[in-house]
Length: 416
Image 1 (cartoon, rainbow, N blue to C red):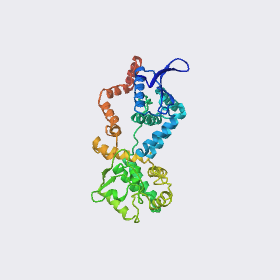
Image 2 (image 1 turned 45 degrees about the vertical axis):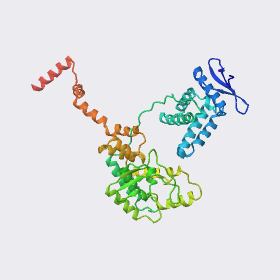
Image 3 (image 1 turned 60 degrees about the horizontal axis):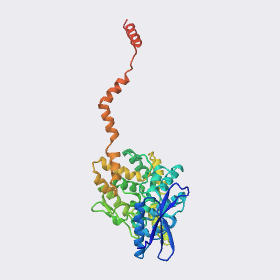
Image 4 (image 1 turned 120 degrees about the horizontal axis):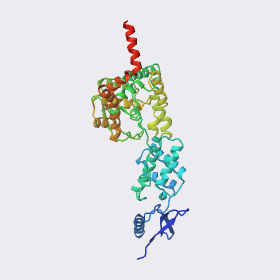
């Protein structure tokens, strides 16, 4: 029986190697060729047989697609299954990849292209963490293509990520937290309550619940159960009163609050004007978002994460400076709360559930860095063991024979 798809070899320009190529006539009667990008005969024959089967069934995938077209096609198919911000990050990483290796056929991308891009990023001064993030996003796009049967294998499947040192988890001590809270109260003192974020309460809730910034700024009064003394993290719908917002990583979760914190929220609610659903969005800012941004179509999903409160980071940095606390981010307050949970004896699974971590490794990282207290335990073990004795011996000067005789003479002279 006549083969519809033929398998040929194609040599590289320098003649040092070859790759397999498929030749066939598509359903429109046009002659096509498709490079497979490898020299594995068994794998090439399997690809040939699969393409022939597709032709016989009356279906054939696009024989060629440049990387930019491939990127647009991939993101269009994915649609709103990923966050808008994630969409932008994937697009940015892939475009950077294309700018580096060229707008080639997506089927001809190899591991060597990935390795070339990795080194190019490092040469440009990108940190190891940044390169890992970019490669992971590019790898994910090709992984989706494999799932959609556009590719046989992810070309970056075996890419080695740059080694990166483990960043120290930045948290604030109890005394720093006290100073930060006092500085927050001083910061809002005398300011217009309609335009000013209630920083002191926001910080207290974060230190008590480990809620993220986006979770707090998208929290509405309906999320708080004053009787049960709980606060719920839940997604928001795009309706006239609220804007669309989705939860990071996991589904909704309910967090406990103390009676004192609940009463502070009750007092805060009683002082808010009617018709403002969000707990922490200042009324004037809510009106601006509703009337000037949402009403004119200038509000996007990513804005629900980044633009709910103007100059958020700058205001928080001012509070840190006034508190004479070390530099950090608002997210470090969440880390501090997680540290405190471990210090109070909560187990890893319990902390994972409360913190809303999708990956256990994230929680375990806090456990190792905070709860395990390895440095202190090692110091105590050293102080009680052989090393401490050696240190004490080492602290005693070792004298030569002449020095010992001179010391003895000096002692006799003193006694005389």
